[in-house]
Structures are given as structure tokens and as C-alpha cells.
Image 1 (cartoon, rainbow, N blue to C red):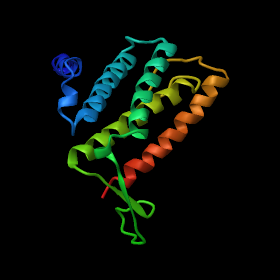
Image 2 (image 1 turned 90 degrees about the horizontal axis):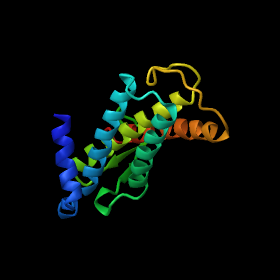
Image 3 (image 1 turned 180 degrees about the vertical axis):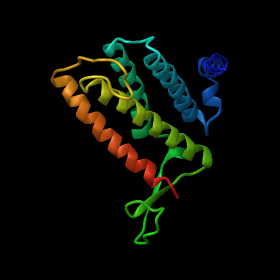
Length: 168
């Protein structure tokens, strides 16, 4: 199933069909990253990939793609933020997001969830010893990795907020 879906998405991307589906082209990018993340996660959990630098590089690559999309969304992906003084249980921190269509809402949350999990792996890679998301010992240390660990933790908090803003 994974291989068939991956081939279908590759066909869509390689034949430039994405540009012919204007309302959904970014959704295909998110779906592609989701599949690549699922493969990476499986490789890590099943010890098919045990090199911390390779895992780190693959996480950073995928996160950069998704972060770029989040920071530069297509016009129809623009989020409208509604601020309110109402305090029902389902409104987080006095505001919520409204998107243009259901697929956009689902794609945003898929993007956020994958980014959260990628940054969780990066954080855990840069935390000494085995962790729940990276069941192997790592030894990535130094200023670059320390800075990335802080960036990943900050991204996780920001993404958590974005997910909670999208609830209503």
C-alpha cells in the first residue's frame, strides 16, 4: 500500500500534475513529506537506520520543506485568525483560526503534526541516551546541535499552539 501510494504521488509530482490541481498542490507536498516521515520513523523504530547524523539530516530536510510552506503558504492557504473575549473551553488563548476550505484545514494540521514529530525526533536525538522517539544512544553534541535542540523545542511549543488555535 505504501509503495503504491508513493508511486502515485511521485507520478503526480514528476508529471507536474500538481500545478494542474491549483487548490491542492501544497497538500501533495504535505502528503509527500508525511510519507517520507513515516518511512523515516519506521526505519528508526526498526533499527534500519541507526546513524544519528543521517536521521538528523533527514529530519531537518523534511522540517525545512514544511517550515518553508508554513511560512510562505499559497494564497488559498492563508489563515484568518479570529480574536475573541469569549472563553468557552474549545477556544485556546482567546483566538482561533478559520481556513478557506476543509482540505486546507486538514493539510495545515497534517503539516503541523509532522513538523511536531520531526522536531521531537531532533530534540530526542540531541538528548543523551535512548528516548521514546529515538530508541538508540546518540552522541550529537556541540554548539550547532545545542542551538538546533533549542530551536526544535521552541518549534514544538509554537506548533502546539497552532494546533490548539485550529480546534473550533
